[in-house]
Amino acid sequence: MNRRKFIKSGVLGSAGTLVTPYIVPASVIRKNGPNSKIQIGQIGAGRIARTHDIPETIKHDIARFVAVSDVDRNRMADGKKLIEDYYKKKNGGSDFLDVAMHQDYRDLLSDPSIDAVVISTPDHWHAQPAMEAALAGKDIYLQKPTSLTIEGGRMMSDTIHRTGVVFQLGSQQRSLDPWPQFHKACELVRNGRIGEVKKVKIGLPGDPGGPDEPPMPIPENLDYDMWLGSTPEVYYTEKRVHPQHDYSRPGWLRLEQFGAGMITGWGVHHIDIAHWGMGTEFTGPIEIMGEAKFPESGLWDVHGSFLIKAKYPNGVEMEVSGDYPNGIRFEGTEGWIFVGRGNVSVTDSDPTSPSASDSPFQASDPKILQSEIGPDEIHLYKSSEQHKNWLDNIVSRGLTVSPAEVAHRSCSACLLFHISMKFSEKLYWDPVKERFKNNDRANEMLKRHQRYPYGTHYAQVFK
Image (tube, rainbow, N blue to C red; front, side):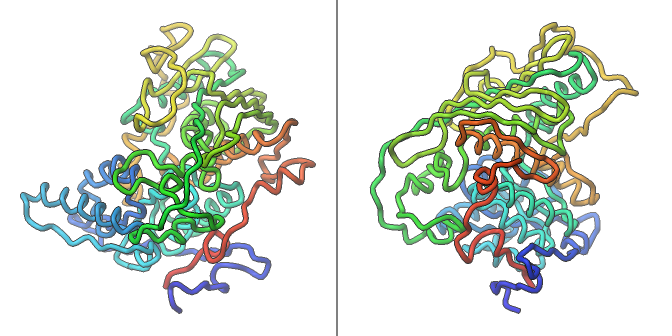
């Protein structure tokens, strides 16, 4: 069958439920040997790809980028040049390879020689290409969040598990490089160094609004319809998408059509660490109460200042707000630990929240931070660096530090908090059934309408 044709028999059952046959990943059947490389395709060649995902992957000799895809042809060409220039410099100026370009990422996925993909697309283009990559037998490194909806995240996690591909979420605070303090903080908390955990306070910034932006002609280099994907058709303006002349912070980050704002932007990172320290990686909150301010005019419409209060099945209470220092504060019966990145933002235009101090790692008693974890105590998964951990597990076929279900649960908590911002009453969540209790209106927000032919419901199998 044509790879672009929607294959109902292979993807959807009679009730419209995703059916994912077990696929042997390409990396399993690739030729193994001392000189073998993991052939990687890059999907999305924007800011996060150029500054983080490509550099942190390409430096490892086991990896070889062979293809790049982006709906913006200019960015795709820049991505190709970035990769080829790296290899030319590494190999003494000689041409190393000709990186293939595919404006439609599905062409990249149909290439049987590609073992794995790095997906660095906008948030509304995460779950679908990740599912399709799994169905095509490609191992996956995915930028967070996993999905814009809890339904989409559940479908993606289930697909990853059924196909057996190696998955890693870009929640790099779990790895020792560059922030080892998160791993140490979670081990100290899990081993009772602050007693029984009672409360977790998380600091996240909000986003400011902005002016109205007029319609603009669609650039010839941009497939705008595909960029919109499963979301509604709206007029093009540059600040809705990404800059055409640089790689500064894109405007889509501040639009609910394509994301949820900083509650999923930084939120997935910090709530993932909170879950790790609390030991709640495979569940979620059971009660949520939220409030937030949203812009009343202008193009950008994600949340500004906010406060979330939640309770987990183990009785731990969580508060998330832009009024707290950027990071995670675990409070127990015998003390507290605060951990963060310090005064770090991705770009100068990123919103910020208050700084705890110059130190990203603090405790009620400094001696707590010097405590050693004994051989019979809880030792959490130790990953040197997020991309390296992914590559190592592609070779070993092991489990990464941020596997699909853990990733889904971190993201789903953020999405629950975002939903709670829209309600004036407390919401009650069943983390097993992944449904709100007695609130049909809230349950309607677990999914979004998907504009055909894009979206997780139209995920394609590639033959």
